[in-house]
Image 1: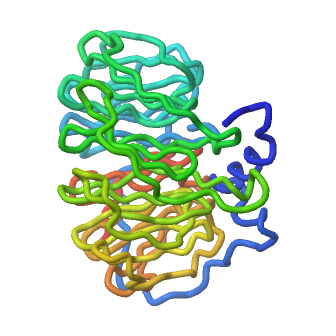
Image 2: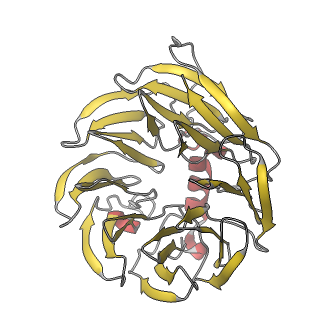
Image 3: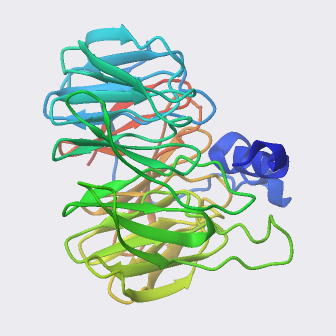
Length: 377
């Protein structure tokens, strides 16, 4: 956001990020009530020697080579996928502010002053460069291009071999925007990203040219705070459509090739959504978890038992939808009807990002640096 006008938004996003539950709205987070357990979380391994991830949190990356995690202090570690044993550790030399990115033999981390470092899977530094501002999300890699989004709203394409800039995408932004960890997703040769004022764009991966741009939502209200309608989470994509949700705005799905809107409906979310086959799952701004029909946007179910607990983006796994909360709890909902079926506590610090797929289970990292490999039975 623009720092000279950001105090109110910074306070808002601090609470939305899980530091205070829902107290900004004058309502206490829901207590954890009883439920009928029909599933169970199983911790396969946990790693507790990582320093804290910082206020904004960090998210690990998983490849066939291993699990890669980072701390705000600049540490980058590779852990064994099956045991969680540390295989190597390096120090990037800068304060890491963006989630770890990995793929095509590269492991990447970005810093609060625009630093970007690329390592091979054995921890050898391959190159280091600087982009236009703070890196707040995981760099993505495809077809020899590293795509990095920065806090000033720019998206940069870099050569994967040497880190040299290949293209730059930038667009005008409103006077007041939300500082977020929204990244990009790459599919079918296009980079998809959401922006301030509810805009969604498809960008050519090779040259940074705009393929299409569409509006998810329009700013509304009388004040600048009321008119914030930014997309603060990563879009979700399959072979046919791309969907996104905005804060204080709407959720919408578009034809992936032409950007034609297929449907939209009013939903506000700062955490985001996930897609599995015919369905979308969303954590809204009140921490209600919703299931939507991907084709029409119609509601299938909703669960508001986690009201104002700052639920993470959801993760769909087999018969369950899994979210974390601001007290470090994981919750599993039945994917068919949204009923709560399992719960477990991690280290008590917020789980700010949705789980990451790891084999037939998943991985989460807490704000205090706990890393957990978990299955659900």
